[in-house]
Image 1 (cartoon, rainbow, N blue to C red):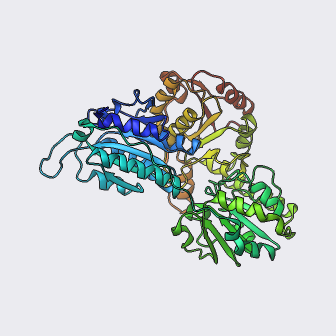
Image 2 (image 1 turned 135 degrees about the horizontal axis):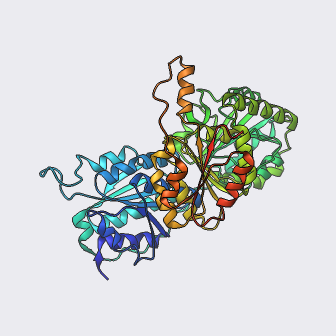
Image 3 (image 1 turned 135 degrees about the vertical axis):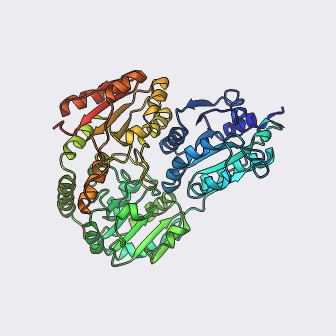
Length: 524
């Protein structure tokens, strides 16, 4: 049956497994809202398009499925461009669909008019395309979901002219059978196997693309040590004796990597934000396994390269791992001593945070999913907090935007109904998107929100001091966060001790609404 194209788009998304859409309706995109309930899709109303984008991001990271957002022409699209940029840099599958004006060249002064809306989105998205009819809209949706499945997942933007959204359209075609990955098979990894057979100190670097639950078994069988990137935390599980953790940014990690006689990086970009130095440190063979040819051809100049997803590589490696004699060059004592030294370095660089991190970790279930913002508390935690499970700590690593944690945590909590989710934000960054507290209250989320309140932009102040710049513009007056949360209908707590903080967090998991927990730096 024919319906306006705006309504048909929701049906096309439902056919591809979409069950939640985040967004804000407006006069330009209201036709897209005609079909949401009819298609059986839940809509989450954000307070700002930036919040809607981060919610879609958080949902995608929690589920592995694309997060979808609907926004209006012009300012709606501009407001969501920051989340699109974040999703691009962190390889998050997200689809943003917006309205656009029918004509922009002849007539000026139209509502929400931009000179080049599609081009603006393309600066931060994987691609941005305009669908001028129903066939193009359906085809672009098909293309987006195919690419989410087969290539490095990154955000896409589709815009549809208002008149086309309102026009009657035939139903969308049923989705095509998705394509299949080119997966690594045991014969494909023969060069890696040969190198492992002569290695005494093999070292694996597991990134966010490693995606397998076999790594603990593989590393144990091979006698290999490992690092993880921030996105790869938990890939080896907690407690693996030869795990150096997410300590790649430590200056001393280059020395450890140089002592390895083979380095194998799986699904790890090894970008600036992974290393914070120009050279990885390896002095021998570097093996790269990645879906992205750009990564395989980067400045690290790997000697062995395999274009494949991390999961199929892990399966292929596990199938032949028994053919490799376990290496004996690493010792658990060596790793433990190095990690103890690095933990002390972290504590010295940002004093007083490590004990608070340890207390929070002890207070929450191991399967809690955490969303953090750009704040010193998160910077410390990402290095010293070993994760029991992969993909359970999400941080705006690449683009590095403020205001990510709360809306992304809402998206994650929506995706993981009934499972524990925690938000960690700094006092300054929290104010970027604090209005999304209203969304969390409306949804009735049992969401602990930790606000680390040091009363300033402390990381920037410290950087200015290191650069011999007199600290300037790093202190801003904070509101009463607890009263603010209560004004939205949330609960609040301001614990005076670590024990009280732990109790507040535990209580928050059972509350019918989110709980803002203000943690001040003098809590010790």
